[in-house]
Image 1: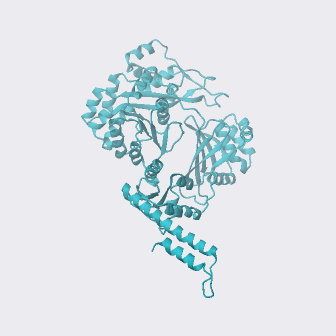
Image 2 (image 1 turned 180 degrees about the vertical axis):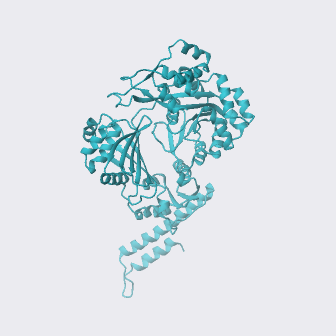
Length: 574
């Protein structure tokens, strides 16, 4: 006898009237009937899910009584879960399990891939019924509602302008802070930093007071002093908007927030470290509204520009930029990507951190504390089938080997190394353990670079160079390629300096430009690298034979053109 027959008989018997009969209202029977039919329908749906699982070769699971935790639910937002008909029902550090009503759906496959790349873990797909899906969807209601912490500092344009009108140079910041109360000091410091085009603002606790310093064009300048009472309130305010813990003062912390302005957002990266006299705070200002720097504006000579343009047009290989922190390596890579960022070209970056967001480029930020390192990220990037990949920095053998292999299999790889010159890159790769027979054909070119400050055009004037330094300059000129040497010989060896004026804030410099050297790995260089035993001196000699203009020589040429001073060139290059 079927379930439906039993229900029908029960209905007929119970609705008959009689002295000994059971009196049941028709409404109660209908309710029981509907419930029984619903249970049958649910069983049928589960059976359908099981048949689907068998047909596609995937496991089936009934989530009716499966304990789904909050961590699993948070892997996919509720709206997206409903849209694709899938839920995550199990999550730990090594594995994530997903249940889908239609496992063949493209959106489900995309979600699985995202989950795997994001968590660097294995994923498993199961078939579930509508009943199981609805059960898990109901569990979303049990998730605690967390109110989002706003990390944006809303500064009115009028407040910003009122501060910036009074800020004309470094010394004026002290006057602005003296007139500000504890509440407005934080806004005043930020507004002044933006007005002065500072890249970083430092608030440092010292024995005799609190120093506010700003980095302008790569050089740190003292700007103002703060009373300790105001300092404590400013530190608390910075921590609050950066989502840092107020009660932790003996450990480093990192955070960020954004300044919302009509002209475009400014991203502020915050770093705190404990010192003997209190916490040191550094805020890095990154204006997201600025247009990407073009290759033409970097300061490359005509010959270097043509060399680099030719190398980036190659379909595969490695282009490496070298230099210390703050030498403009990332800016050069962004300028290269700006040229390469075209329809039909997939570019993926792996950065620490992502400093500037660029439309049309897939940018990913490494998170070493979560296991998402450059090495792991680069392997995941390669599964995304990019044409061009940018890796923020090659730090270890695993990253180096993956980058080299990618460049040999049809990808153009852009990356950086911390070496003092272009010639130092090859020995650095080899010291990591990179195999010479792989490295030699993978390298296209290596760029060495520094940033020098540009002289203020308003107060620039000719300057005298002491005899000993002039002899050093002449020795460098003598080593230049013949074409450049002849060009320099036609000029008077005249250099410039700037004493400082109102236009440059009494500093003498305004803005920066790059000085470069580009070493192209040609056939002769490849043979030497293949031999394995090659030093920085050997590479420098090969580069000189090629006719490479070194950074110091490029700096001298820019100093002769009055763009920078010879003192500035020697400041950034020994």
